[in-house]
Image (tube, rainbow, N blue to C red; front, top):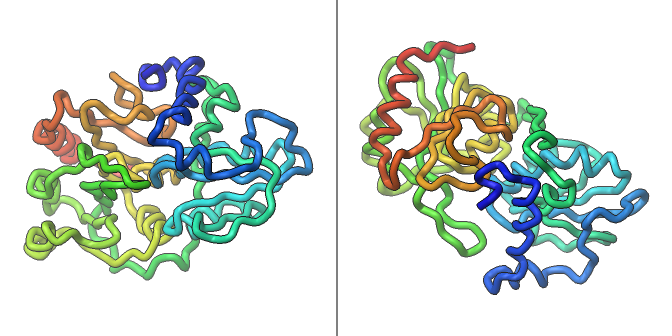
Length: 298
């Protein structure tokens, strides 16, 4: 895919072909209102919505400032767990859950169609961070800090809009090699999976807490010195908060991670660790562990 290789000038227009695929029909036919493809927005109302996963919605929110500069009222329709987090970005932007009744709007546009509309290239990508905002009341007070705090996520939600992608998940028995006594670790998952409970109960060096939505996840991330995460919403939130983030990528990676590079233009504070071959998480964890031994807060 041209987006993955960095040819965004052609890649993003090609990405709009997804709407012609049979599996995308439910998303294509969701609205009768005109899709925004660059029409004058002054004095109009535009609905921006996420048709893909949580991370894609967070990534797409980097365009809100550019859309707002065109003069419309903006409504965002997002998955319920994202509503409180996105509502804090800009008080003039209305954020609703996708299940809520829709108010009036003149135009609609999926967030992941904004790169094509704005003719985005790697040089023009809106990459200013942070663009997410954390409110102090979102998180209960943490215990006194004794070591550098590292937030971790070793699996993704596993599905979105009825589709699954489990390639990015790392068995906790492998990921757990990172959880040494050198640092203090916090799970950034909403809750523990049943298959992880025994491991977590026997490792006192990783703290778990109940998180009700991504606003609380973001607040916990903001308290960390470093984030180590598979390519999931946690990694996007960390990048959008300008937190140091080490993102662990499967082979092949998601197209937004590009190929053959350790940095990510979308998130300047991120470092990428890539599987050399499909399924090889052991070598990824070994490399991360070497970097972690020398990690000192910037």
